[in-house]
Length: 372
Image (tube, rainbow, N blue to C red; front, side, top):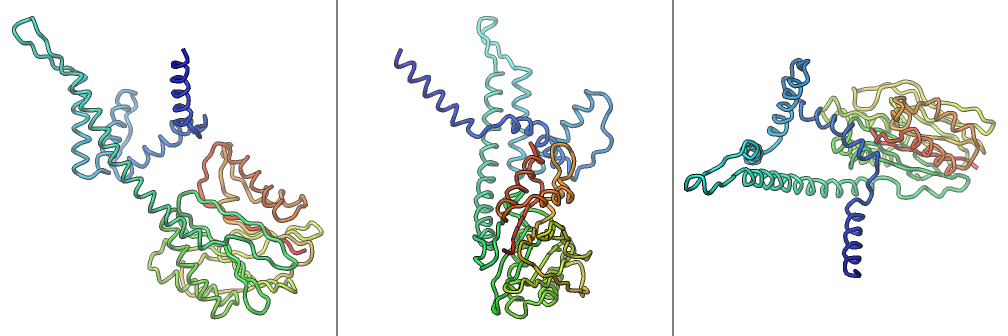
């Protein structure tokens, strides 16, 4: 009895480890969102035409799309293995019998073909999984290198408090923000968003980071920095490689801040009296064309003022209700008082509640600073 109880505990322990982290919403997402996304990815590039109206023909039509989509995303050798596994399954489904010595001995080959089909699919699955693990490991290295470009801690400035965070929709993100202390008691503030997602956006972000560091060494004035960044991004030669950016040069002691906004969501400045002001004006993102005309603006941060900088992954995120988080909701969250960390956490809690079961669809950067 004790031995059986021990075995049962082992089985329960294995089941708990095997299903660790599993949530009901993950299962729903598997058959709802992920299945539709997989079908969209497999059907991309195929001549689809109009789907049949009858259920049976529609099922056969989609099965053909999935088969071709899977097949042509495999290497030729794996494609042949995949087709062979399906043939084995059909042979097992219909069954082949062999009779030896009249009616006295019968061999049913259907289990054999089913075993061959399962073995071939498992072998193919293993090969594809190993490839994915290798890519994931490389992406993890790239993600770590990218995280090294972002601030690990907020600057410790007398008279100021900071809170910040960064989330990516994929392993590699295209958002960027930074704090750079400069000579003469100044601080460069930057929040940007590279076009696209994944590796391409991450490479563009890394290019912008390197160019920004060089620009700050030459001349940290907003118009000078954005001109150099725009020139570097235009030279990439890819018209889809552009980046929105808010850049500000803050004089720490006086609180005077000169800034430029290139196609980026306007930061929100909550005055000590409660008034909320948008910083910026409409403009093109960097990398669209050159030259671009700049009209630097300035504002003075007074004691009690609070500044919120963010990327569009915050305001434009669509939640379970099908609605975007919205700029109006973000402004409403600033009416309640609190230090930068309190305001930062309040915004993120509201954001998580808004998303619900929906995954993060875009990178998210959030920076909150206050002048004491």
